[in-house]
Image (cartoon, rainbow, N blue to C red; front, top):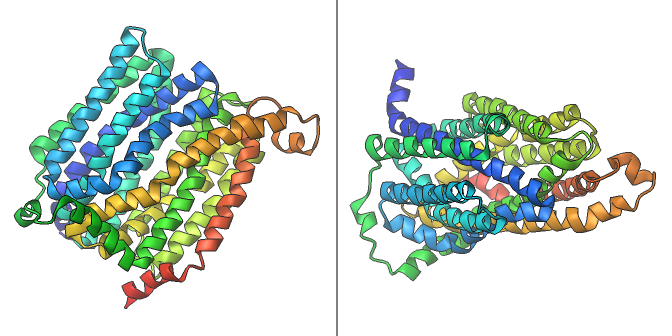
Length: 432
């Protein structure tokens, strides 16, 4: 009976979550296929990294304003419009492919438009979850959301690689459009998101609305410092993401299949971590869990990717590096939802996006530069020296060296923020 009541209370969220998760699978497959297509065209980590830079830049620059708009607009309508515009950009890619006119700069432009839509949609989606879900289910929801993400991480490389091998990239895009249609219809017809009429008739000026999120964060130094911690982690993670395709697709022993296999293992790892996070009881110290999970990740994956020479070691690195991330994200999500007042969550989440994610395009740029213009030239000049013994020879060995370097950077970030007193004050407030 208790389980039935739980499902009933979470029913609206489950419908919303399932539709959005299915659509996210299609979007991830298209993004994955375009990364492979771009790297095959140019063979450059920096050119490939600009795919994400073009997507994240408008997201970072306009996030603060998007939250103010999100809090003033109807959440459901905002999500539907943003999804529709993003779908049109996918159709544009398909049309360019069909006519043989697709160029890399087209993808940059289309990614920028999609990133802009995500800027507005993401805070609206976060607030929608808060509105349709009782607070006692926040931790379970964190587990479920990362469960969907991990399943998508498993399926994306497997399905995409299979479709690319049997058909063409356009088949991936057709699948993406089908998933969009399912999610759009589900949200439009079967999900009701309650709206506070007073909230929609905000009397504040637009500038005052934007300022609200910034002022709140100035007063909540624990949340502010936690966001800075995650910003530093995102810098490391985005450098990793920029170097990953370059190593997997060009290093000796690497290929599309190898990259797909390692990505699938990462998905399996996050799936296991998500299931664990879903059933785990609330920890005594959420801050300790966040710090320990990130430190464990930084101490394992990058070293194994750097020093490994085959898919087995790289897969083990991916598994260890991602197994604890869902647990970290679940506890982070609970802290945010409990600490940030619901009426201003959209504004605060948008300021968070600007603070916590502004390092992502920087990291992709540094990762591309670091691989193409620093580490690869260094490794090309080696002649059976110690670096060659550690990281191998030929194209891709520079990416391995880069992974070794960022491993130490990530560990330093975790250790430095571990002693930030403002972050630990969040735990004192929650327990108090």
